[in-house]
Image 1 (cartoon, one colour):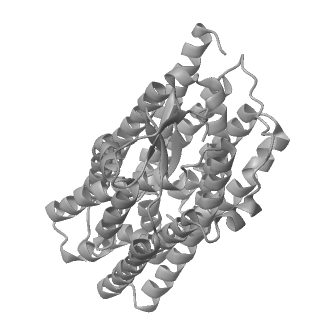
Image 2 (tube, helix red, strand yellow):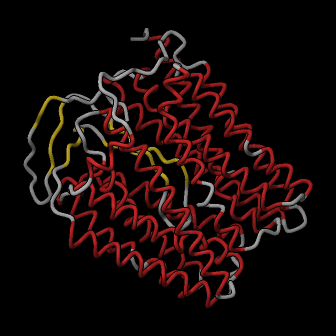
Image 3 (cartoon, one colour):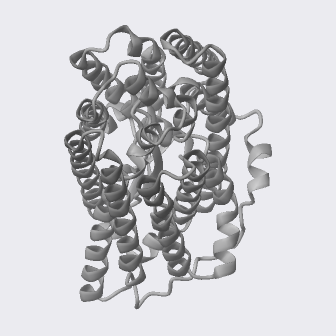
Length: 462
C-alpha cells in the first residue's frame, strides 16, 4: 500500500489526468465528423468517421491483454498508448492548415486514435486497482468521473462557441487550434500518468487460471447471458445503422450552426449525467431486466423523431428524452452483462464484448452508408436510413422481450459506475464499466427488492 503522502499525490495526478482526458474528448473527438465535412469529405464518409475507425480499436483491444503481459508493466503500456492517442491529432492539424488529401488521413488518424485509446483502457483499469485502495475507490472514482465529465462539457461548449464565432473563412484555423489543444491535453495525460504510483509495482497480476478469449463463446452458448450478448450486439448494430449519419444530416439538411449543434450534443450529455444520479435506485427497485426492456422500447423510435422538425427547441426536447432512456439502457446493460463473480472472467468478457461490439457497429454503419449513397444522400435518403435503423431497433427489442428471462445481478453496495470514453450526438456513448467493490455485495432480481448479502470477492478491477 502507498504511503498517505504518495497516495494523495497519485490521486491528485489522476484527477488532473481526468480533466485532460475530458478536454481532449470535448474539443477533439466530438467534432471530428463536423471537421470531415468542412474539409470536403462526403457526408456519407463523414458519418462513417464516427464508427468504422472503432474497428481498429476493437481488434487491438483483443490483443491488449497478451501484449500487456509481454510488456510486464502497466505504466509503460498505458503511457505509450496515451501518448500515441495524443499524436493521432497531429495529422488533423496538418489537414486543417494545408487542406491536403483529407479523407484517407482523417480515417487513418481516427483509427489510430481509437486503437491507442481502447488499448490504453485495457491496462488502465487494472493499474488503477493497484494504485487506489478499496476504502476510497467509490468516493475517488465518483469524483474523478465528475471531473472528467465537467471538463468534457466545458471543452465541448468552448469549442462550439469558437467555431460559431470564427466564421467560414477562419473555421479551419480554429479546428487546427482545437485539435492542437486536444493533442496537448492528451500528451499532458501521458506525462501525468508517467508519475503515477512510482513507489508501487506496476506489473500486471497474473491470475492462477487465465480466461482465454476463445473460451468465451462456448461458455455463453445457450445461456441467458449469451442471449443478452446477442441482443446487445444486434441493438448496437441497429443504432449504428442510422446514428452516425445524424451529424451530416443536421449540418447538410437542417443547416444547423455550430452553436446549435453544440447545444444539441451538450443536452443529451447533461441529461444523461443527471439521470444516472438516480438511475441506480430505479434499477434496484424494478430490476435490471425490466429497466433494460423499457429503455430498449424507448430508444427504438428515436431515429423516426429526428427528421420531423428542424426547430432547435424540438431537437433539444428529443435529446432530453434520449438522455434519460440511454442512461437507463446503458446502466442496466452493464449491471446485467458484467455481473460475474470472477474479476478475471469479467475482464475477458469485457474485452471480447467490446471487440464484437466494434465489429457490429462498423459493419452496420457501412451498410447504412451504402444505403444512404445509393438513395442519393438527399433528405429522403436520410429518412430511409433512419427508418431502417428504427425497424432494426424494433427487431432487436422484440428479441429482448421474447427471449430474455429474469437475470440475477450481483451489485456492489456502494456504487456501480461507468467510464465515459466518447460522446455521441445520437445519445449512445462508448463506456467502460468500473465495478467498485467495497465491503458487501447484494444480489438483485427483477421485481424482488430483497437482497442476499455475501462477502465481496471483487478487488475493484474491471
